[in-house]
Structure formats: C-alpha cells, structure tokens
Image (tube, rainbow, N blue to C red; front, side):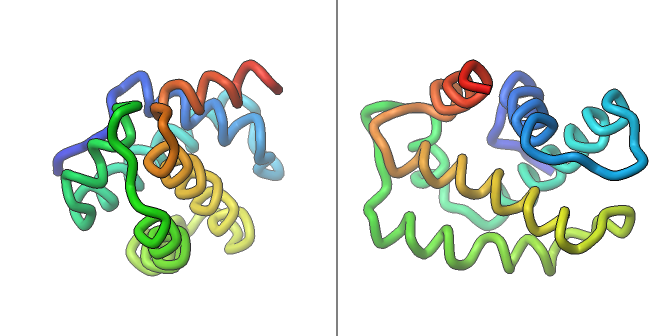
Length: 127
C-alpha cells in the first residue's frame, strides 16, 4: 500500500499521540511502537480513499482545502477509519481518541495555510 506521509511525519504523529494518550499497562517505549504502527495503518487507509489534491494541502502552505471539505473530512474520516481499521488490542475509547487526534491534525494542516510538519512541530514544542 502507498503512503502519503513521510517516515518523519509518521514518527512525529506517533510522538504526538504518545504525548496525548496513555495506554494502560503498557510501557512508554511500547506505546511509541504501538502508536507508530497505528499511524502507518491510518496513513495507508487515508491515502487509499483521499484525493491527491486534498493530500497535497498537507505539505504546502500555498494549497488549502475549502471549509466544506475540511468539515466533511472531520465528520466522516473518524467513523470510517474506526470501521476500516482493526486495533483489537486497544479499548474502543482509546482507539477513537487516536483517530480523532490524527484526523484533527491532518484536517487542520490541510485547511490552513500551513504544513503538517509545522503543525506537528508546534504541538510537540508546546507540550
């Protein structure tokens, strides 16, 4: 399967999740490994269903998606991904939170005159 995120973006998204979510009874290093696998799975699935024009907005300050598209992505991507991706080792509440955080970060980067890397760097530096 193809990916639209770079390996560096995978790592940054996993770090974002690690800072925002605690998986009970799992060591911090194992959490990072789990989050990296989750980000890669999300990446592959989103790339398979999202037009390239929308994905291009993630890495360009000059390209943004319309508010109506960003709203549709926020409304539809999390439930779609929740059904499409099986994470049987995560409680439903944590799985939902993982998906919400990643989708929110992707949509905000696509809808604003910024890049995903800039958004992730801001988040990681702020926490």
